[in-house]
Image (cartoon, rainbow, N blue to C red; front, side, top):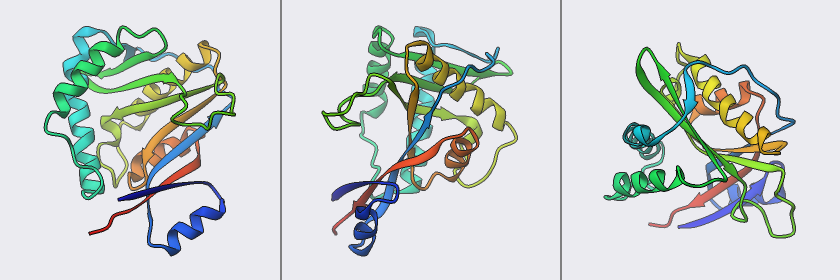
Length: 204
């Protein structure tokens, strides 16, 4: 397996396509974060939410595996590892974790955190950029079609954005699988635009 990356409109994108690479992950960006109306269905996560977050993450992984089974292969201990990481994440002061509830049921979660050197080369100033890496909501659980609860997914995303704005960020990146059409549509409706594409070529 070989991975490559290109900015939108970059020369590398055409080269990858000619060499048989396919898009696998997209980074969507939005600059100029704005205040949003708080939703009563979205709140900060706490330790009591970890089990529900892990269950939602398992659904998220199933969708990823469906979209690209050769690339996304869940680890046998994925639930336990993710659960331990969520417990630890609650103790980290640089991020905010949110859950979405509706009709008394758990709907989704989002983790809002600062950008790291994994996302940007070292010469760049990353202090004003945040990342929403883990973001899942039932409204986009069908990767191919729209949902009647579209607004609920927006409310969760906006809460994660506001958290970055309050921490001094002016731009946000959101990670999204290239084949997840509903997640892409939700992000574009929220004002995000594709900035970076990761490509993959798998040798058999």
